[in-house]
Length: 252
Ligand code: HEC
Image (cartoon, rainbow, N blue to C red):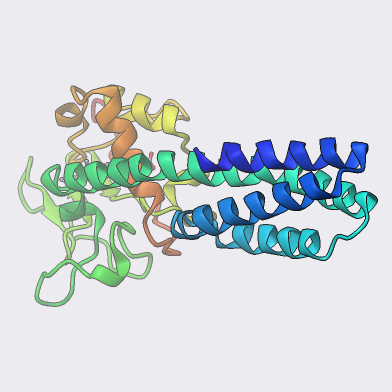
């Protein structure tokens, strides 16, 4: 591709500068310029605006060269910068797949119903988009105690639950560095937790978190889900620790 041609003409500049061949130097310079004019829009369109501006400056410096040593001085940085231009194309190749990964994760989180429990709701029980997946609000009252054995009572907004196991509060799944999931989890331990129902500290993840349903997801799907969670707006919300009911199996 054209970026390789830039490298080629950069080397020609060095070669003809060493030989002091002004005619060839001028020729290589105008070829390099032409190539750059052709490739520049693509570099900028692929998110390489910074790299393009840097290369513009190098081409402008080359345009001012008169003596062979000026050409040599201009050619060095040009050759170095060709790598940076190539990186723009490599980056552009990998980023659509990152976008696709996040899209897949969003899809899985939606059909997996994560927001049913992990997103606070408005007074009319609509998911509160400004606090997407940020867990049981720290300032919300705990759910009432169940009246009958085996009953489960949810908080208003359905993010905290009081049942035979005690009280569980849906976790903050956003990437907030202090209160979000990434504080305790990596991609690996996230996958492990959804597969086994154990958090990284070894404790059992309490009901009603339906990890059993997610445990059969493929590695790729769980990675996509993690990538999506990491792409969320960080929301600061320190979720309360669970309250374990005494003597209940799995509530240790
Ligand atoms: C029916 C409600 C419900 C649904 C649906 C749900 N969760 Fe949970 N989740 C919870 C509760 C409650 C907890 C807290 C459990 C505890 O305290 O041990 C929790 C805990 C977690 C944890 C462990 C956090 C920690 O602090 O160790 C992760 C990770 C998690 N959920 C991810 C998800 C993902 C991803 C989805 C969707 C694919 C999801 N959850 C769907 C209720 C739910």
